[in-house]
Length: 204
Image (cartoon, rainbow, N blue to C red; front, side, top):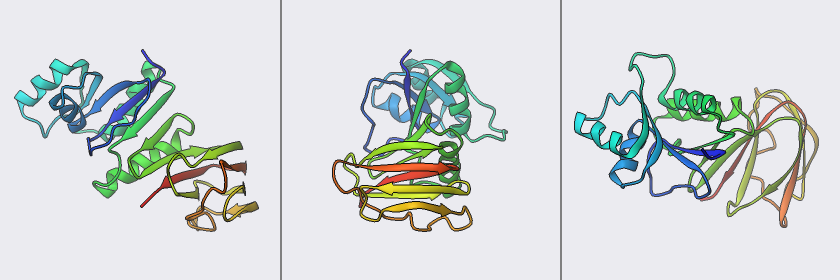
């Protein structure tokens, strides 16, 4: 088992690279199987796939976890819990944005709930949460960097187009001064003095 697992919620022409295992989440598992891509885990209620589709998923997955369609968790939340229980240190959600906005909200909430462990990586967006500490932030091909307060926080930004010095940010004002910043140079430096933030890299 690898340290990292990429959990595919849907395939949209982009699959993150790296030394990692793959997990297919509900229709994401079917999309991987249809592409002939093997996965360690397939998990979901699979209520929208045909029995022949499920057989294909089973042929390309080392394990298949079938969830009860009547449940409190979304498939992505159940997948994160299962993968964390298996011992993965990082879970990358892909195909997590651009669909139903309620599911998109839950996926972003999972990132905020598991800083340093769960991230979202898409072709045009990457989201990760940070708690107290100082971090180097690299552009990695993304033009914009936005910082949103998950809770009341104090943030400093250096080597950025719009620097901040111990800026207090309230969760009631999520945009604040953190929207559409840009890294100046090789990397920016973000210090979270208090609280927790959601960092979103994006490009047009």
